[in-house]
Image (tube, rainbow, N blue to C red; front, side, top):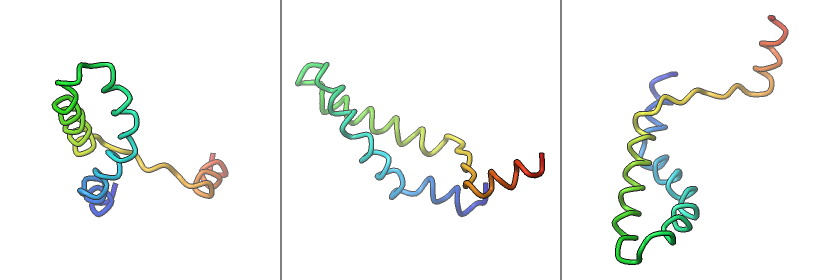
Length: 74
């Protein structure tokens, strides 16, 4: 993966986008815990998500046309 794509994945904007996408699920899961612990647990979940986004190796998904080209080669 090119360096600029990797830095883009690890950018704070991308991290925030991932957190925003997962926020409804996080909120629904937080209802399973006591009210006093929800804020702390939400912060811990958010930190874990950010840590994974920073360290996980993401593969680029091929476009439709790249996939067709690869099929022609095989």
